[in-house]
Image (cartoon, rainbow, N blue to C red):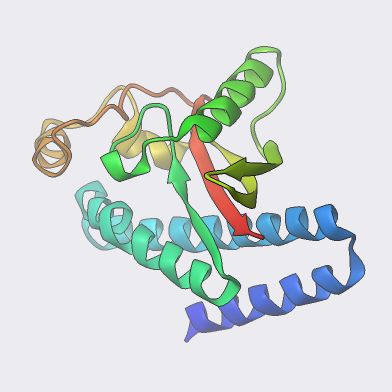
Length: 188
């Protein structure tokens, strides 16, 4: 029930923002709300899983629940939402060329001293003859991320990760580094 309330509030906020903003602004605002709510709900699910059974219980949240949440957030809005990273764990989250460009921009800005929190990149693009509005929101590596993506992962967790993600590249992160990004595509 709580999740449905969050989703309904998101829809209401997006509709309100759409009415009061210009074309590009409304798309950016819509993406901000979607990314924020998706991130908040995913983080909440991760915390619940960790509290109930330790870090190993967080793996199914990222592996399955994140995809379910992405589908649920995408359907009512006619958008695609997900996560991506240069150092991906799930091969389905590999960045495409546009996402790679955005991630590189985020990393450059971070190295120049800009904070990743709230960092965004968006652009109207044409791909395969179709126009869309693309949006990325940086995911800074936080303390919660370090449990599964940091430098000091337990042997037990490493074993479970290797079983679930044999091509895992998403380890060895440090606090504050660019973990990846939430990615959104709005079709036109």
